[in-house]
Structures are given as structure tokens and as C-alpha cells.
Image (tube, rainbow, N blue to C red; front, side, top):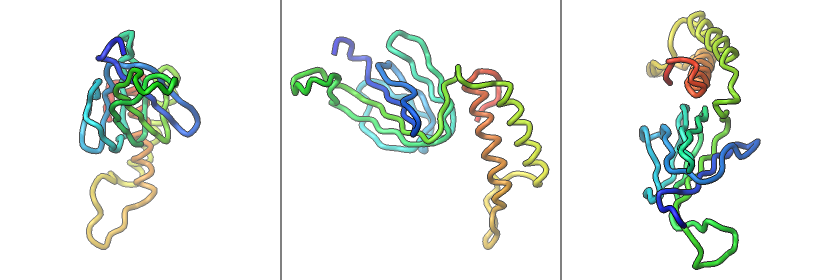
Amino acid sequence: MADDTLFQINLVTPERILLSGMASEVILRTGEGDASFLAGHTPLVGTVKPGVVRVVRAEGEEARVAVHGGFTQVEQNVPFDDSGDPDGPTGTRVTLLVGVAELAEEIDADRARVALEAAEARVAELGGTASRAPAEGEVADPELVEAEAAVLRAQVRLEAADASSVTA
């Protein structure tokens, strides 16, 4: 490969491939914390937490994607062409498999703000926060858990769209 600072990125949902191509960096939140993947990164398989994934493309532009959880895999020595030539160029590949994701430019920020307000109102109506772990023998209120998940989804969408200073 001509530029050893670049690697393959594939961001895939059940509906479509959102991003595919060459990148110089991928920044995201994993189950272990915030991560930045570069060419040559140690191979790994891990979880992706809800948040904004930032992909710095080969051309230098940044793509922002709201993701709502999933998995990542970093591989080394992956062929960069389909020729099957064992001596062909190889390098790093980062694959993100996410159930739900949206490119920032596809997000309707006004709709996300309305969804955030409605979800916050529902959380308040249900009496608080689901982030507190239930006491022993106590069962978490599923409606409250879902309302808080809706708040997080709306916050992530707004952050990806860069339409709010809200952080997830």
C-alpha cells in the first residue's frame, strides 16, 4: 500500500454499509473507554458504546456517525484488493458492526431535539433516573429504562449532527 498511515474502514448496519474505504483514524467509545484506531493498531474485538464515531477519511475530511451500540474488530495483514494475490498489499482493517447508526448529515436535528425533550419529560414523569442500580430484590422499571435510553439516543444524534453541546 502506498500510504502506510491509512487503513480500511467498514461501518455496517443490518440495512446498509454506511462507510467503507480508506481512513487515517477512527475515534469511538468502546466498552473499555474511548479509543482511537490508527493503521497498525493491535488486533482486537470489542463492544461499541452509544456515541459519536468520528472517521478521518484519507482525504482529511471527517465523517461523524451516531451509533447506538455494536461491535468492533481490528485486524492486521488484510489484503487491500480482491485479486487474491498473496503478495499484494495488506494492512489494517477496522470493522464496526452496529445495529442502528446514522450519518450526521442525515440526522434531522429539529426532530432529535423534540425527541430529547419528550424523553426527558417521560423520565421526569416516571420519577427520576434509571442509572441508579436497583437495590437487592428490586426490579428496574422497564419504562424508565426505555425512557432513559431514548434520552441517550437523542443526545447522541444531536452530538453527531453537531447541533447541540449535549454529550452522551
